[in-house]
Image 1 (tube, one colour):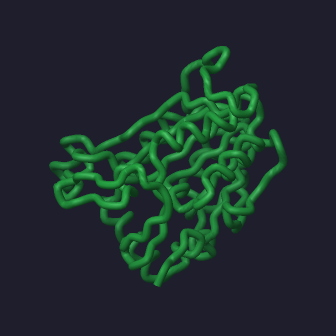
Image 2 (tube, one colour):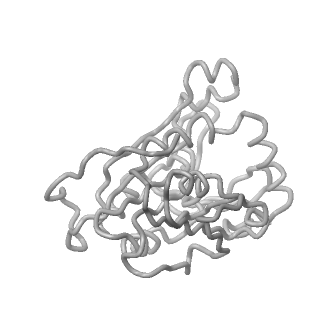
Image 3 (cartoon, helix red, strand yellow):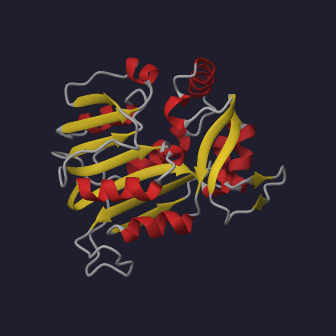
Length: 256
């Protein structure tokens, strides 16, 4: 059975496995993904935010508590949204990324936590995100690292056929999980083509101390499991992939 991204987290067997992993302390979210995302976020006080792939709303609520005035948290999973954490400034919406849209220049920040590797048409999604953002707005997201989504990762961590992009089927809690592999170059070029200048590119890996506590995570020091990208909407002509006329200032986050 093939489990597409927009139905994956409604699969009871998958959701049970995912939740058990998060409770076990062996997931990469707390030690790697959440700190990396927090460090990359711009100030959120007063911001309007879209969270793509919000799950149960952990990131959406953190953003609201940090001062975001409105967080539209979007996910395709009915089961995840049913368990989402309520907050007066977080609005949850069930929608598929393929046809989800908001008005042009209506938000200051778009975020996504480990969800966009399920998106088939990344170019179309980035084009929409670029339209949603006000000039100077930020797009900050994490995905599974292309070293992980590449077609073959042998037991000795050798990556094969890295340049062959497209659909991949994997077994993760259940068989037939569909993800989409694209290279780092494709991710960056797609963002720049739509006027989003990449300010931060990070590949967080576990610390030696975390591996000592959880030896099964040692493989993630041999090849990075997560790619983090922080980009900003600049007033550049579409198709311009050169440098920005003026680099914006560094990031600072109010989370934590």
